[in-house]
Image (tube, rainbow, N blue to C red):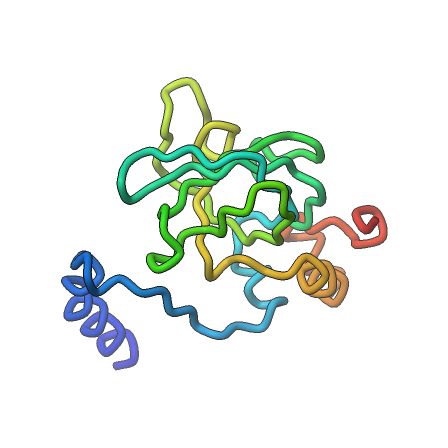
Length: 163
């Protein structure tokens, strides 16, 4: 019954999402440890560049400073691209170049360029405003995750990542 109600809300609300005047970002509250568990990857990265793709989308390029949950193509010191909406009202990532953000990322099944693997630099990761976490809160969530969950999820122990 619960799934049916959620499906009805999604189907009935979908036309509003695509109406330009109705765009607004609204995030469900989630405990950081649970959000970390659900994410495909989690990092702290410094925004180095925002590359507009079209009126609605942009690629946000981050230099990886800490890895809390690794994923394809994510290594300490590497630069990754994250596809997102270009406006914060549509849940796009913040665009302050030079600022560090904690990011909970999703692996995209879409490869943006033929020569890259999903998650590799150049495409494959998606994110949004709802997956932006204060870096110290992300570190704390990783620290307080049960050891078994960190190991199975590939979350590095905080002591090896913390600065």
